[in-house]
Length: 158
Image 1 (cartoon, rainbow, N blue to C red):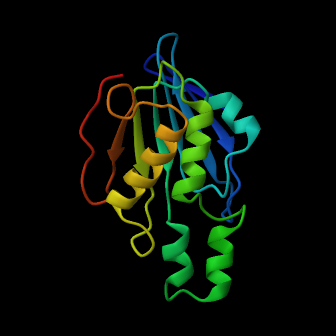
Image 2 (tube, one colour):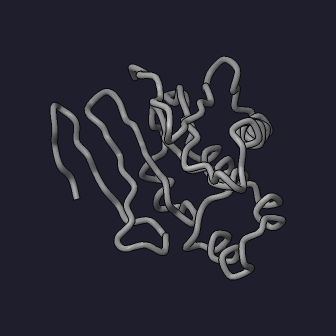
Image 3 (tube, rainbow, N blue to C red):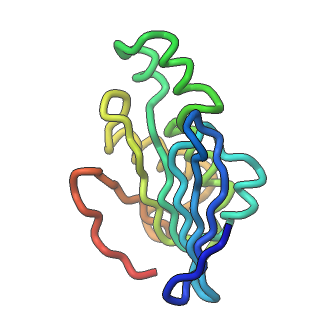
């Protein structure tokens, strides 16, 4: 479904998550494109095709797999989070990002981090290392940014 507001088209698409009608969003006009993906168990090739080349991403980087496996959650909850209907790990997010980043991409906001099974520094380090392995320059070309549900993210102009 597409809606238009203030010169931007906003498209919503289904994601793989164990919730009622979960969506991801692409905000774009003729010049710029922002993609927001949270609450998904994986990023499909179809999704990658739609989001490739975005100028910025708000991208789920929910958990560190080792932290999740060691946490106090019941095994059933861990299995749900790790499943294709759960949440994207730092590593899976990074590999998906590596497939969709182009020369247009300038910012990636790591979002929806688990309070129990992730840390901002760990997410940034894990994602950054994998992006560097894919020859993506996280120091000069693409900036990795933190988000925090309790703190407003600074405004960035695409």
